[in-house]
Length: 408
Image: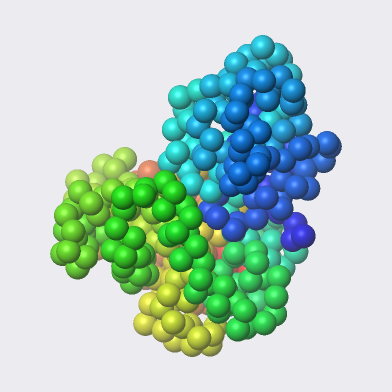
């Protein structure tokens, strides 16, 4: 089993909540992770006819017979369980760490949690493998330092690369789904990614949205490969697919809610009057993107016309996966003005306001720092961060630090 950094955070949540929900895209490793929780746990899979019948025939009785140490896999497929869970938890509210839920599709799971388990449940998201996880490294200390508003000098001191450039490029090309990383067979990896999207469409989307036009929705996912990292124009997407704008909005919400697409709202907390207020986004796993674009290997990726946008999405996801695994809450935005000033990613939450620029190259030219420096000054940010492929971290200005992706 590849070590997952989220495991420590799940242990913390289990000490504080009666129930913990672990969500994430299908095949991100949730079942394997939960199968390695310390202690005695019984697992019930809601995709299994037998388990589903046992849990749902009389959920109140089931929970009286199994008052703790219960894992419910794919819990979004068992809506009647949630009211019974609330009753069981409230009968012994002081007991912690009794139930764990997992789910691959967040819209249904989130709705059930919000309606019945609010205040009783801790939430965690398991993403595909981060760069460090893929190479069996411990979590980077940078995430905690950023959350604690460490000085730029301390960030630089902790930003030494732990991997070489070839390893970074390989993870960027392959993406983070665990199963392809379990094999060195290039053909298996290629075939796995090819069939993954069909599985996602048939199982998750087919079960949750049976009336969805899957052929058109698949075309949307293919189209999003070329739109990752760009400002979205729903009217243009609708014309390309031959559907309405409301349909495009609904489909993008489905893609975001099932962890395939990352929705990035426009940053609007700025004194600047000429902001671009349209959202942008990216497909969340770089390996899936590259397979859909039919890029054969990491060397071909480095010279591909969409390499820069793919790298921006990849580096942004590395940061967000790292914060999520550490249990550090952040919300992502993008910033752009009508005059062309742009910051790739703006994070808010426990990190304060953290603007991030992503560069594929090893060096960052001083002139490319202007938009980031202005954002830092206008919003009085303690730090502006650049993620690139340099061989070491650097303090580029008083409050601007560059960190190699290999340090994440």
